[in-house]
Amino acid sequence: VIRLEGSCLVDEWSDREVAERWGRLYPPRDKKRKTISVSEAWIEQKLQNSVWIAETRQRLADLGWFMKCLKEPLARLANREEDCRGTFWEARYKSIALLDEEALLATCAYVDLNPMAAGLVQVPEESKHTSLKARLEHCREQGQMDELQQALAQTDEGRPIASAMARQLEQGLWLCPFADLSEQAGEETSGRRGMLDGFSLAQYLRLVDWTSRLAREGKAHVDTEVESILQRLGTSAKTWTGTLERLFKRNRLLGVAFSFSRERLQAAAARRGCHHLANLCGCSA
Image (cartoon, rainbow, N blue to C red; front, side, top):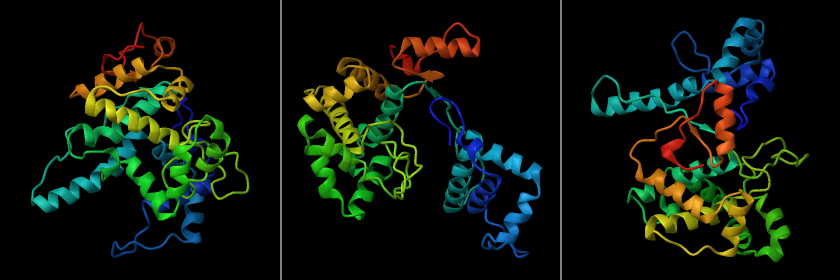
């Protein structure tokens, strides 16, 4: 719910949408503590309580609350399976500010390639619990693997066709799409803000595939398509390679911000009133 530039989407939701979303996360319960469906009467009751609406809106935008909701049921499940009690997670989360598009994509690639870098799988698409796997499974379930292959195969000459084709691949997917679909008025995906304007799933798969070859072999040929993607991001193969290698070699993620741009780091430091910010894992900017 938090945009890259720092503004919060929750602020744009109506009070009713806040109540409805909370009801989906935490359904009301009856006297026997059994969950019941969210009724119109329950929503109307919540709408009358402005203090509850304000507090709930704040919680829906809070990273700490999100991590609590994510980790608590997993910890309870694990403790039940192990028949034990006590703290399951070492820490709630590590909060690092992503300051530009390159950092956002590098983080996505790093997470999607972690199972392969750890030796759990041979290729990225074999990973069980990654966004990349979920995106590919969605295309397969929708019968769109042929379209995805065609989008991957298109060269510069066929870019307009590939771009139009790629924008259809993530319709109905619960994950945030790569391409910005918010301008497709009248379609099912209308209003869904993507991560990057003009950046498609096919382009991301190309980038991850090339990056995975770096992790497996330590080197990889930069084809024309990958080179154009890196140029679109305002970076180079050398910079991208060095950054990802630093991320994979570190056991701990150190730093408070992540950027490929020294100017963005300096601007962020100025906003925080400090001299400089430590870039993630000491990556150069």
